[in-house]
Image 1 (tube, rainbow, N blue to C red):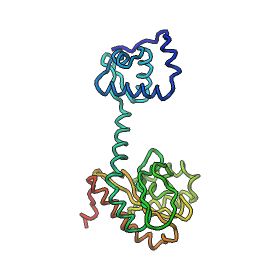
Image 2 (cartoon, one colour):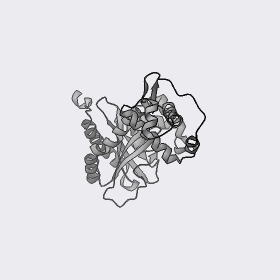
Image 3 (cartoon, rainbow, N blue to C red):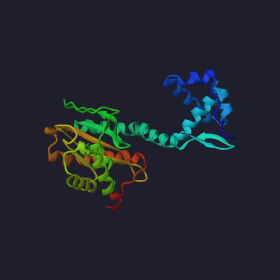
Image 4 (cartoon, rainbow, N blue to C red):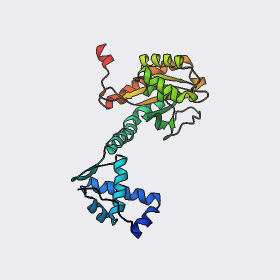
Length: 268
């Protein structure tokens, strides 16, 4: 099957250019649904949606450019690699809160502090869940918000497997968010990596401290992180050192649900 060559636009085509964005988006989603069901020919797609060939071609071409569709001459359209990428992210983000909920709820109850759950979302940490503790403390975090990696406990825990070069890149991208020089920050990150958890020492929010640990999958890859956060008055250095054992244990329990095996405990 060959691509349709541009033609003189019809009246329907001219009106199509002025369609609201939501309607264009809906048409694009309908094209994806048709291709997913096996409609791969451009003419069949156009007829199924009541569109001109040119309109269908423009929609399909845009989705090929954005990797939502693939196009193979004489074969037709197929779903693109972008959907695999998004599907993988969606499965992690949607399933992790369900798997982690009971664990982090028990942690919040045991500590009396607020517990967060987050994942790496491009160059930020995305907050997937927040369970408030019993203390009357207002922490400004919100489910669905994205925060810097270098200054949050959740973010640092997500970076514990990163190389020094990767960490330097992240620091340089976020240096306006951080008040510690790179050498000091990298040294802290080395310590956090060795101890298996990270601290937020009032770096992201004034008078708020937290202890965070990574969640891993069966391949030992970090897929998320959890943190216990509270006011600095309840989070002196001594308590943070105590809390790291509970936070790591909870993160490990969630990781076990994904098939992760604690090789340290086996070796011991």
